[in-house]
Length: 121
Ligand SMILES: [Zn+2]
Image (cartoon, rainbow, N blue to C red; front, side, top):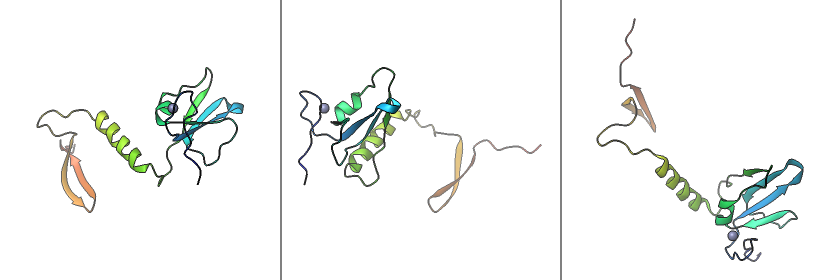
């Protein structure tokens, strides 16, 4: 029943989705899922500001993964898919990717063997 918290950055009215915690002892800024309680040295950040976050000089930023089952899991999955899509090299037209040939399936596993047979010496 807590009101929606907003980003702590000046002039930003986006809803907060991350909490940034400064661990002064370790010179580490930890960026994780929105904390349940507001604590000292914690700053709520929207997705955009969390993305742009840079650590102060000499500090390290640790980004925690979302917890499984978090409400924003769908968004995260969509983001992960988009990243994978972007990272995938465009395959040459008509060329199979990789060196393996599929020779069978066992349930969800594919049985592969090398495309170039190893010759016995
Ligand atoms: Zn913001």
